[in-house]
Length: 308
Ligand SMILES: NC(=O)CC[C@H](N)C(=O)O
Image (cartoon, rainbow, N blue to C red):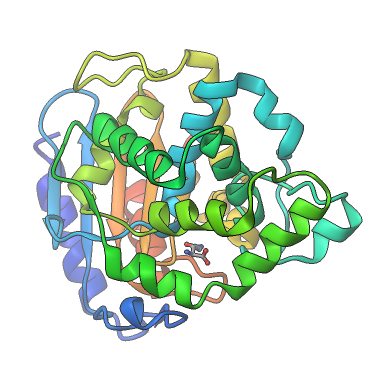
């Protein structure tokens, strides 16, 4: 993996020079403040140190990448009963779309669109208080990344809460079908905090390692999920991790990936490595524009696509 460092430096130099950086998310003021010039990449191999380039030690808002961690947690709690509440098909709609819910009895298409992630958070809430559920999610992410320094950005969480009408609508709509069992304000209190977890690319890459290593985190030796479950989570990332941009991401990059509107993408290279990228400017689907371009370059140079 030593030869990776020059390649990552090259990718950073190439992308920093590009003039079309996409649009930084501005639905909350806290995210709109982030500079579109930030760029980071980290590769965590299954053994050996993480290789990084750019702003890889600077934390950013993981946003929807958190949906991957909450899905894993919920599967650990109630197993395949998760699929009674949430589907496993790509939505072909925007991440925050409401249209399918009315036709499909309030059952979200998949756990990565907002509606599906909110339903998953409702599962994690279980019989707990919102504060306890938030604590549990944060502890789980720290456990995955093997790093207790990870925290929640309270300002981002508050900002989400103040501008959360669309998500609130999704939650109320699902509750009317019985898909969500807790009061929407409680579920969203947890959801907004999970989205506001701040991590850097190094931590994010480490947190994804169990998915590249058949469910076992090679850093800690802990079995996080079974091997078939890791494979299935990767499949969902490939088909649904980039919303209505999932087809294009598979076409260009060819790796299971999960994006967030903070500009991060976590990509899994099964049996090899995990890649985390961060570039805050987004494309029309709300996925990192230059983050995707960076992964495309990396895969071209390394041959890491799962499609050969
Ligand atoms: N795609 C995303 O990252 C969306 C997360 C964002 N917090 C929302 O709920 O709208």
